[in-house]
Length: 227
Image (cartoon, rainbow, N blue to C red; front, side):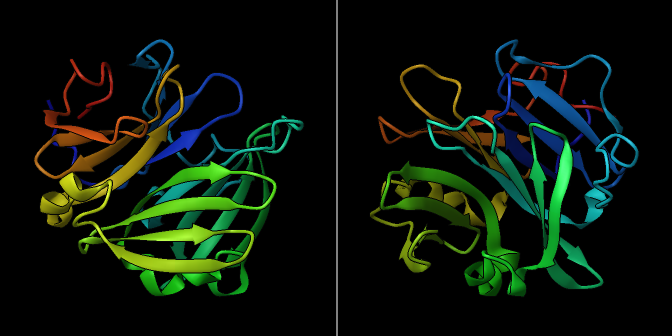
């Protein structure tokens, strides 16, 4: 089994829920189907040429996450990929339903500009809640803190992991590589935090429990580890 220590995971909501893994060293990606609980067999594939007009190199991706459409509109699921372009933080807005790029902008000139000071510390993003008045995200950092961000009011706050619902993640801050949400479970939402040394943690949103570290191998993520 290869060592998985240089990759980024992002979630995908349109159609069957999936997780995409970008492997930085090889500029390839794998597609993990959550319902089937396995990586699709014809992966990994090169990033270039397989994402429509998306041309970002896997090596430049820092983190990414999906913003869901409102319940009355199922045609606007967007994947936001945050990356470096000539040493400047940029973000690509990718419409999942059409496999097409909506926009590319520097983070400083985007709706996510509040995240810019934390760009290099962001591990992953979990959509916390959505209503007619709030659109909250929890943003995990690798420095012992996390951010809460309301995309409607542009209100951002920093919180220590210690004594929070994510308290059990705090001892692993220095080992965090990437994190991704799984909305598939019927009664809960899972947040996977991948660590160095081929391990990961599973945070269960409703129960507020953390499980792991668990080995990142062909048993826990069938078909994913690759050479």
